[in-house]
Length: 120
Image (cartoon, rainbow, N blue to C red; front, side, top):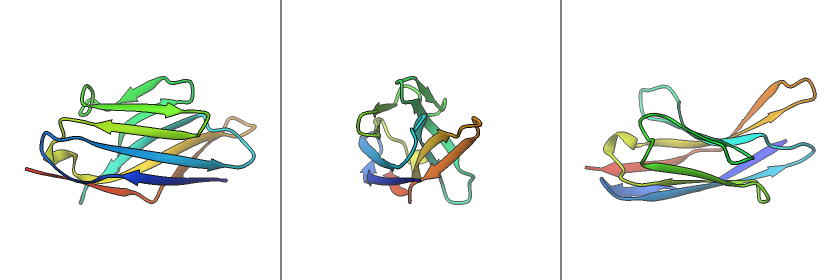
């Protein structure tokens, strides 16, 4: 099982910065990748950024150059530094962790979500 605990988020003015962190508690197996997704009201959940435990990042085009994802594999913790925030970044941000089982099947785990609100 994997349990994810998120922290950070809140309210910020456009152009400001916020950071998120997510710590994973893991039992019995290893995490392969972690990341952040977001869901705005009336929209589908979308990828923000992911990173492998080896440190290889992947960003959505809308956040590239503004957000930075990093991981501390020794702590199973992923971070998201957000800068130059826009009102369009307003959403509930969800932490995600991915594991692969013995048959290489993917299993996704999700945090409870944290609200990020960017005012104009």
